[in-house]
Length: 223
View 1 (cartoon, rainbow, N blue to C red):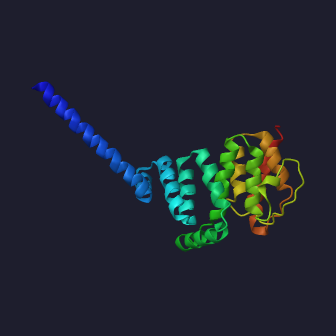
View 2 (cartoon, rainbow, N blue to C red):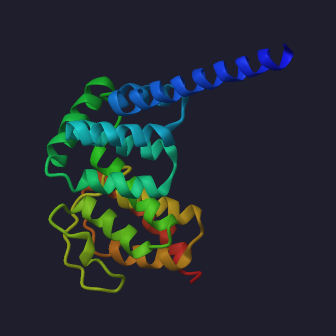
View 3 (cartoon, rainbow, N blue to C red):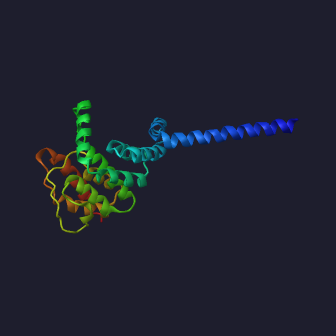
């Protein structure tokens, strides 16, 4: 009798587990946006990225692609950051979307300087640097400051065929510079400093520019 009860209980448990798997599969493929939201609320951004990506494959909406990029940054997984942030910056609607996000931020926090473009570019530049590709990282950061420049053309010591005339606070190159300084990487600091030599910051950007330049110079001297 006891064995029958145990077998019945295990059978019921198996049915329940099977139903749970089916329900989860239905939710995953039928309502990925909802599951993404649940994962975000739980702080599990690694799972959130995958559900956001699936949802984006259904909608092809840049806002959903941006959600993938933002969740990838919060997940702190460099592979996701490189993949989805690169997809976002290469989307033909990226510039317009950045303008929308900057306007939203300006309305909610008018006293703070923020650039969505530099936030995304800076994140992927740092991810590339952590992955060991410093040249690609700096190329990304330079492209953030000069949209007409193609990041693939950048090489350390190569021709400076870019034009940077502004250096706003927390721009992608500035953020990457700070990260390199924190990592005490004299060799890459020297490479970044060569880019700074070709920048003509506006008057309001001078203090920020000079502070980073001096810090990079001090570190580069150790190379």
